[in-house]
Image (cartoon, rainbow, N blue to C red):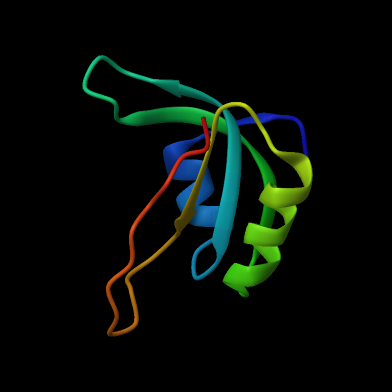
Length: 78
């Protein structure tokens, strides 16, 4: 997938999944405006493995939807 999606489109299409994003466009408050979804899966490890394989310069991984009783952190590769 190489099309830019807005945050609302990402939330709608990938609810309940982990997503790897690249080409992030953010506002001055660092809110995500749009990005390219590189990979998505219900399994977090699938997305992490893809990120390790591709080693994107600027990316983000996050879960779309409400967490299921656990805490998690977001990280971006530099």
